[in-house]
Image 1 (cartoon, one colour):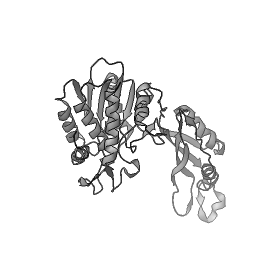
Image 2 (cartoon, helix red, strand yellow):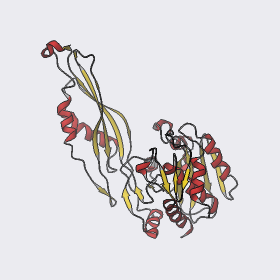
Image 3 (cartoon, helix red, strand yellow):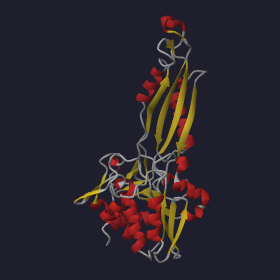
Image 4 (spheres, helix red, strand yellow):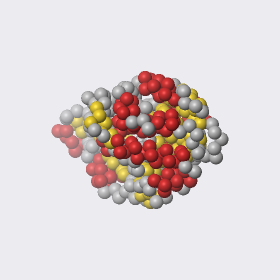
Length: 353
């Protein structure tokens, strides 16, 4: 078998920061084009490779090709069974596993769609998976999806949704020498911040996975000058919500918590939101993956692209090599054991009825 750590190091050596993935995409396309039975299509900087064997189920294996900007770690370094370098965990180890599976398992027991997509690490409007769904949904259709995000080789099922909202509180300007003549908008934040600090998050268990919601103040903007009582303040809040709520229900929840603290001239505006995804572990392919490999299962508390599949009725989970807690750090690295555990489990899924 290919040395997966060395293959990952080769991929790390090809710089692919967001919006600059072309060289890596060309390498992936060149590796997959000669594989017998693979239908390889490129859409922009996204590559989709599919088997067409007429199997009863189709599995989508997906991974993003981009990394965050380098932090002095753009050159890969292998030290024993550890690979150090940008994107090693997030998620070129996952890409290496996908490439090895695609090149070596040419007659899987289920049809497979391998999706290598661009620009995951930047704003959602640039996301390559979203681009593929818009350009040709059939290219990325399937019965179930597994994304190779770093999970330390355990199943992280579904994902929580996320939304940002801005609360704008009104005041009245005055000179600070005569502050009693105005209303300090920043001071009006006190009860709202107290309410957010006292917020009791839900921890619902869905399909055996326990999620943990959150409501956090993440940004404050306000003030005009050092001698002016501020007449406006804007507080940005982030809400993470479990997959038993959609965006509309999550928005209603935030309004229910913060709305009673708003006056007639105040506002609460939702900036953006991304849907949650249910675990979907009842699908037989996912059940087989978990049971045959005795994999640990936990809820995905962050948001990932599994939500794109879930909102189209495709159960999806995260399963990949590498530790997500060191992703995007200068010390990002990947262990050989995690790579091989992930590869072994997915290879078993593709070769065993």
